Amino acid sequence: METIDITGARTHNLKNVDLTIPRNRLVVFTGVSGSGKSSLAFDTIYAEGQ
Image (cartoon, rainbow, N blue to C red; front, side, top):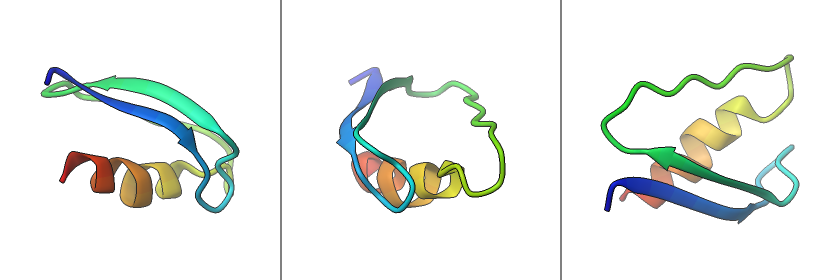
């Protein structure tokens, strides 16, 4: 698997988010306070990577 695929993420401020993230690459998430960056990184992507 060379990517982490997220489909329909709905955690806290995330509303039906779909994305594909390459493994073994530096990926940066930016946005305003409260936009769901931490929810995406810690709750969704971490769980998918297990």
